View: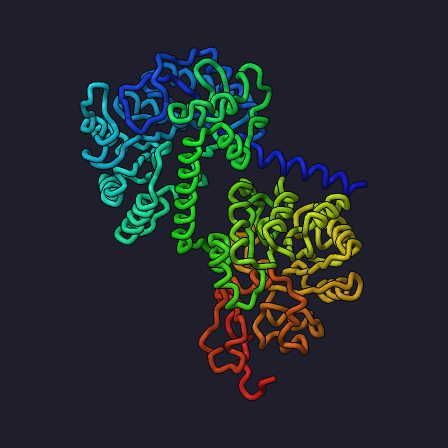
Length: 640
C-alpha cells in the first residue's frame, strides 16, 4: 500500500508540473502611436480598467508555480504609465502575501521611454522588450505613424538610454519576406549598437515562399559565420517558442475576457479565433493552471477555425517556425556545457536521419527520443532536475520522420520519461509510426503501479532500462534521495517480468556502494535473473563532489575481484577484476551504450603503447587529477 501511495503522490505532481501557467499577458490598451504594417492587432479605443487589472493579478497568482511573470502588452503599454505602476505595486504586494516571486515584462515601441521611466524601472524586477527592426531603412519599411512619418531617431535615442541603464532588456526584431534580405546586416547593426540580447521574430499571418524561408536561414548562417553563434546574443538558440503561431501564452483582454493570446495578436488575419480561443472571464476562473493547453491542442483548434485560405497561411507559418527551430537547435550543437554528454547533445538536437548516420557507426541499432521533464529523485551523483515537459506536438512531428526511414527500434530517454503526463500516448504514437521495439530508460518507481506498467506495455513498450544502486533499501534509497524507492523499483522489475518483457539493470559504482557491489551483482544476476552492468560515475555538477564519489581503481580491484559486470572502466583495471574484458552486448541496453559512448573519456600518452588502445574507453581527466596515472598499466606482452 505504501508504494501505491508514493506513486499516487508523484503522478499528480508530474501532470501539474506540465500544466503550470507561469506568465500572464495584460492587454493594457489597444491604442498605439504606430501603424506597423505587419501588426495583426486591431486598432481600437479600448483600455483595461484597474478592476480588471487587479483580478488578472489574482488569476496569475493562483498558479502552483512559485515564480510568476506579469507581462504588460498592447497596443503601446507605455501610453498607460500610471496603470503599469499600479500593476507593479499591486502585484508585488499580493505576491508577498502568496509567498511567490514575481517579475514583470513591458513590451514597447520605445517612443515614450525616458529617463524618468528608466529610473522607476531600475527599482523593480522588470525586463523590457524593445521593438526595433534594425537600421533606419529597414525599420521604416513596416513601422510608421498614421501620417506615414518616421520616428526612428527618437526610438534609437531612447534605446541607447536603455542600453546604458542596468535594466534587463532585449530587442525584438521582426523580419518579413521583404526585409529578410538584410537580416544579417541588421543583426550586425544591433550588435554594434551595443545590444546584449536580440529575439528574432518573423512576420506571422503572411505567406512565406520557400525561397524567402531559405533566404532567412541563409542570412542567419551568414551572421553566425561573421559574428559567431552566440546564444547569449540571439535568444532563439535557447527559447522554446516555435512555432510562434502556436503560442501557449494566456492573455486577459481589456474587458476581462481571457484568451489564448493569438486570438488577439492575430485577429486581423484570423478573425474567427476569438471563439475557440476564449478561455473564460477573469473573475470566474478559479485557477490559471486549468487554462494550460499543449501546442498539439492549439494546432487542432487553430486549424479548425481557419478558412481554406487562412489554413494555407497557418500551415506555411508553422512550417517556417519549425524550420527555424530545427536550425537553431542544430546550430547550438557546438555549445556543449560541461554537464552534457557530447554525443547525447547531438542525439537530442538531431533529426532521426542524422541520428541514424551517427549511431550506425557506433553499432547502436536504436534511434533515440529525448523527453524533457523533471526527475523526482535527488541522487547524490546528480542534482534534482525540474524542467518543462517536451511538447507533444513537436514530438509527434519527430516521430513522423520514421515513416520515411522505417527504423524498428527506439529508445525513449530523458531525466525520467515516465514522468511525462502524456507518456502513454507517446509510446502509442511511437508504435503507430513504425517502431516495433520501444525501450524506456527510467528510474523505475512509476512502474511499481502494475496497472500503469500494463497499460504502457499494451501501448507498445517492449523493454526497460532501470538503475539499482544496492541490494537493500538502506543503500539504494539514500543514494537516490527518495525513501521507498528500492521497494518500488523491485516491484517494477517484478511487474515487467510478469508481463514477459525485458529488463536491463545498471548501476553507477561510487564510494557509497562499493562494498555492496558484489552482493548487488549476485542479487540482480542470480536473484532477479536479469542483465546487469556496473558503470563509472562521470564528472559533472553533482550534489556530492566527484572526489567524494569516485573510488580509486586500486579500491575497486581490492573490493570487486571476481565480479563480471564492469563496463566503461579502463581495460587494464577490468583485467584485474574480472576474466572477461568485454561484456556480452546482449547484457547492455542501447540507452546505456549511448551513456558510455557519450562520456568525455581521456587516454593519457601512457596508453598509446597498449594493445587495447582502440577498444578501451580510457578514464576521465578529473580522475587522473585526483589519483594520478600510476594505476594504469598498458597491455604490452599479453593480448588476451
